[in-house]
Length: 148
Image 1 (cartoon, helix red, strand yellow):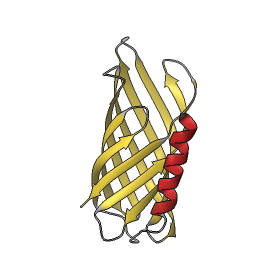
Image 2: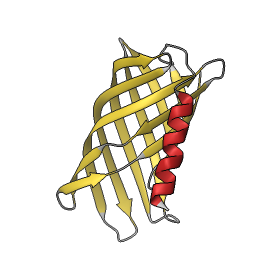
Image 3: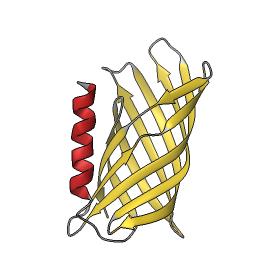
Image 4: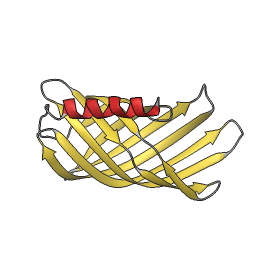
């Protein structure tokens, strides 16, 4: 089942390569699907940088988390296909109750769909778990946002 999801995400990424306007949007609001669902907001800060904030929940309310990322436009690959880098921090509270914290180098690819106010993103960073224990964590997320 996991391989099937990865193939599905890869197909979406390849299809989106053909779309694009070459600009960073001032605002983007939408959802990001990873281990759960995340309501997500992006704000351009100028100079090819942006701030991303998210609130997530998963598994029937097993946890609630907050995420903040700072992205720098690393490279416009082609058309509306962009590559961003920057730090990402996450903190979550579970039903146990237990607090989890993670810091990761943010790596995100996004696609501005030409002629439609839509931004599709894919990220798959490796994180460093810092609370309650240390270790590595891996995550993959697919975001769909309305741009304005």
